[in-house]
Image (tube, rainbow, N blue to C red):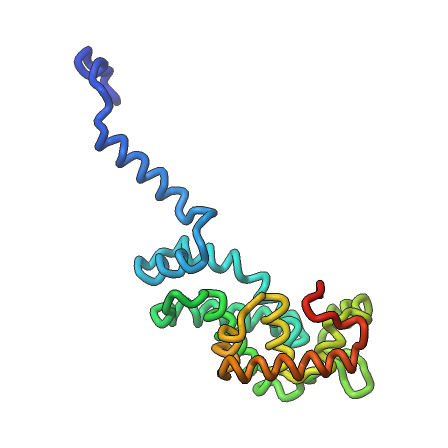
Length: 220
């Protein structure tokens, strides 16, 4: 039961310290801020064990990660498995993340390596994105088969057919994720010069294999 304020209390001015504390509490309830960068969220999650910041990282990055993994693994089920494993690994190894490098680069590095391991474990996997030698989708994924029929002439399908795993990843990271040669190199375990050479050769192959549909710097 709350007692009514006394006349003295009614005339008292707000305590600035109390007002500041209330403001901080309200800011904390809004934490993390929509304007916080992924790096700020990662630093807070790492330094303070902030679950809200890590959840924000998952919310922001799960879609681009899943998109990449589906292209590389050819199966939504496998891609979702690796996506979950990626975030579990990132949470477990968060202390090893070091700014000022982009958090997304560090996370894609984990996803890329887990995808390679997945491909090796699943020896039935077809490296051209799920197609067999006769061009058909593996029967274990009817959803992928329907998706393939809809996107048969999609440019990225053709890119995946032409380039090997590392070359495809380098082109994807460059054009879709707008990563620099240095960032791609950290993911692929190559020097930035080696990445530039890889990209140059990949573009040449795509120009030859796809023709006018391949426009470096264009909208993929």
